[in-house]
Image 1 (spheres, rainbow, N blue to C red):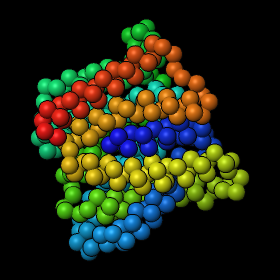
Image 2: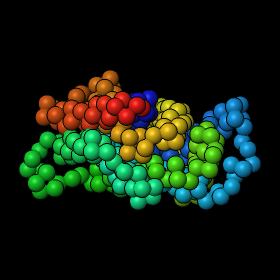
Image 3: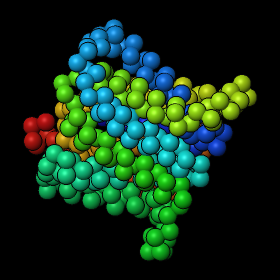
Image 4: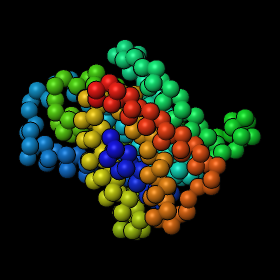
Length: 287
């Protein structure tokens, strides 16, 4: 999950640079296709694709649809939202995921985990409102952040559903099924836009973003997420996303976009503190 948070962070910064240059559904349809090809080849080279994995294909359609919705809404949000504040919205997913995990699997939070989620959520809200107490009291949240929040609901539901719907398939096989399903759904949804896209005229940053999100923020990150989801409680899996805003700041500075102002960093510090609380809980519980 540490790897997952670092890889995912890059998609926020690169996505903000390309979100207005290509239709989000088109970019993510191609992203799913490329990632499915990579993961499919990996599955054939390792575990194979057993026939029993094709049982109940509706599972893949449900999970693929949720993740497709998440990514499309993410890129729609990045058209207007700042990458750091958008990534802060992402850190609200552990709290939502914990709620869905209780509804679906009756997973309960320890007191320490609950405290960590509250601390992390408070830090995320502080960043989302750009450390402006007046804006927080007026509940002034940007349109981009609002769109992405709806996507994060889909992501939060996805995490416990993976564990609930998995029937013994390996992470690589289960990821492949989800990617194929998501790619099919997005391909059907965005077919007219895909046909109308002038691919040869797209600027280089779009191709860089597409390559990164397909290989690193999809293939590698999905595998990491699937593996962790099958071995850790849903809330703890998503808790590692608290590092994402910190990684995004590193990405923004590397891309020459600058760092957020000091008061916003207090919210970032709270999200990191939440992760440290959860890591201590993990050690105390014997892993």
